[in-house]
Structure formats: C-alpha cells, structure tokens
Image 1 (cartoon, rainbow, N blue to C red):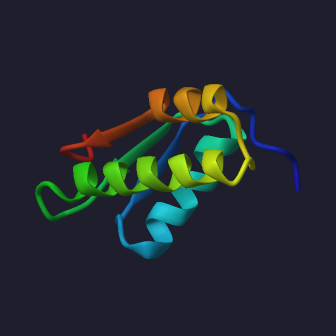
Image 2 (tube, one colour):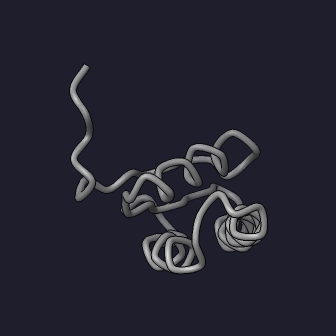
Length: 82
C-alpha cells in the first residue's frame, strides 16, 4: 500500500466515535480533514470533541501545543457534502 500524501484531504462522513477517531488520527498525521454528519450541528460538536481530545494529548505530552494548534487549523466541519 502506498502512503497518502499529506496534502491530500480526508473527508469523514459520520461523526460518531469511529468518525471522530478517524478524523483525529488523520489530523495528527498532518492531513486536512472535513467532517460531515447528516444531523445539523453534529459536525461542529464533533470538531469541539476532537479539539478536547487533542488538548488531552498535549497534557499527556504525546503531541506539542504547536502540533495541536496545527491539527485544529486543518479541521473543518462541513454543512453539506457538496
């Protein structure tokens, strides 16, 4: 399997536990991530939850504050699939 170029965006459809985990892993790896959920407002809620988990990774010294900030800047909740 070939590695996915870090400039390649990742789209996550569904923001439940698994979707949030996939988004977090992609963000920490360096990918821009778009989050979408069919329920209005859920993508924003998931983005907030992912941000909180990134904060915990900083507290545990698994990533730096700069890495967290960069990951957050690559995360974009989407209101539609278009």
